[in-house]
Amino acid sequence: MKWTDVQEIGIQLSEAHPDVNPEKVNFVDLMRWVMALPEFNDDPKHCGERVLEAIQQAWIDEVA
Image (spheres, rainbow, N blue to C red):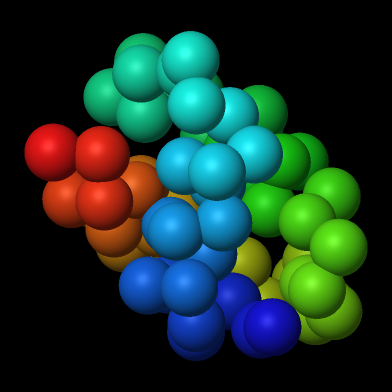
């Protein structure tokens, strides 16, 4: 998975952290949790605020 796979990342985060409200996650933790996903393999330098916002929104949409 790469940073651009926001939908898949959102799904995996919702499964990995079922008791977490994605609206309350700060971007530092979000980035760390994404990089810890087993299938994730991308350069941290390719991540930015817009990418994290998109991932957070995909996660919110997944749990809604």
